[in-house]
Amino acid sequence: MKQILIPTDFSQNAWNAVQYALAYFNNTPCNFYLLHVTLFTNYGANKYSTYASTEVIETIKLKEEKTALKKLVKKIKKLHSNPLHNFHILNAYNFFIDAIKKQINEQYIDLIVMGTKGASGLKDIILGSNTGDLITQVQCPVLVVPEKAVFTVPNEIVFPTDYNIFYPTAILNSITEISKMYKSTIRILHIAKKEEQLTTFQLENKAYLHEFFIDKKHSFHRITNTKVEAGVQCFVESRNINMIVMIAKNINLFQRILFRPTVEEISYHIEIPFLVLHEQNG
Image (cartoon, rainbow, N blue to C red):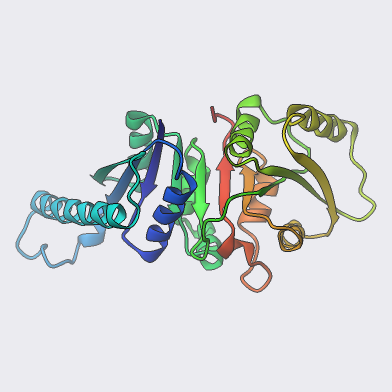
């Protein structure tokens, strides 16, 4: 049974992430953990502070949020009744990342599903948003669901790579798991500069990927573009891509695809889910 953690702030973006996760795992037995994290530093001048101590405020807020989480579960069950899915509510008074790490360890979480505002939200990552902190600081697979992402069967997933790092088996197994689940075709994409030739090391890594995915539907693609993010956008538009898989270890490529694009240039940030994998996956 899969253990899925879904942080929520009760926003529309968070609800969209819940809906996507339920559809994605529609045929998979899962325990879904809905987590709301409160930072009480945000309540320094709130309606309680004039008469209550920090401890009393904490108790009141946690009770309110627990009630809100229960309402969320009722809403989910009413709209998405599935005997394969169990729901658990969690709320915490903690720093966001610390609360996430605690639940990963206690619940043996396999995947985190996090909603985001899309291009503008991802742009804010460099300023330190929850989503940005999550995908850079937590060693657990994260499925980032943009605001306009609607679940469709991931018939094609794109795996951008520059072939400059060797991917451990555990990471590649996470990609094959998707392929098995939905019989997805893996499109391995290299964005290259004009006249750029692969080094011996890059060619070896490419050959290794071909060997690893030999019994899965996969293909290799090369797009010539000086901007990696524009190359990914071009590829997404030219094919029916339903998911982008990124490896956090490949920092340069990872940052260029996920953090640098502007709203004007890129639409995949608001439509296509990102699965971010870490070296310790598996």
